[in-house]
Amino acid sequence: MGRDRNQRPYSSGRDSGAFIALPWSVLDCPAYRLLSHPAKSLLMEFARQYVRDNNGRLLASGKYLSKRGWKSSDVIQRAKKELNNNGFIFEIVKGHRPNQASWYAITWHNLDKHPGYDAGTLEAWREARSGYKKIDAFKITKIKPQEGVSKGTTAPSHGVTTTPPIPPEGTIKDDFNHLPTPPYGNHLDMPSTLGH
Image (cartoon, rainbow, N blue to C red; front, side, top):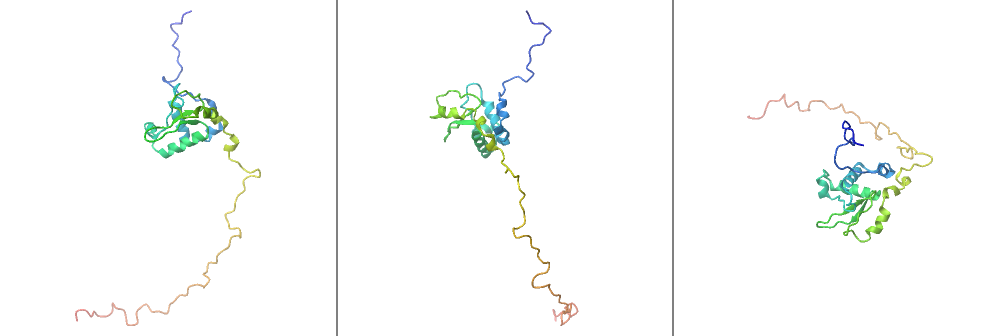
């Protein structure tokens, strides 16, 4: 049975090109909701790099990310640490100077095989896989005591003392005994002695 000529070709309804496949289990987990904005942005950078057979060779070096608009190496380092600590990425190869960048894997995909991985990586990967799911939600939520949060006082423990408005030695006495004019007369009323 042939296709009707008036029928339009199938369209997915989105712009053409590759896309990021990010599972809802990543976006809905408690660990993701508590990530900082830079960490969430860096996670998108990792997801953007993944293309079928390179999980384990993803980059987050300053040189690579600067081309993607990242300017601060401190922000990158903090975001990488946050993603690693919360089980979203795993460092496969430790970078070293002068020109070897670290390699990473996103933990919601299987690790792709590559001969350049650090020793012990495959064993460690078994624990790291889907690590974001293993973060205990109880540990990352803010804990409040059962009796509630008490309001602390801002006053000293011995109470608030009022300071008297008058200094302890008494008020300053006024002195109106002096005349406004010097005893030898106002210098403006005397003739000038210059030039005599």
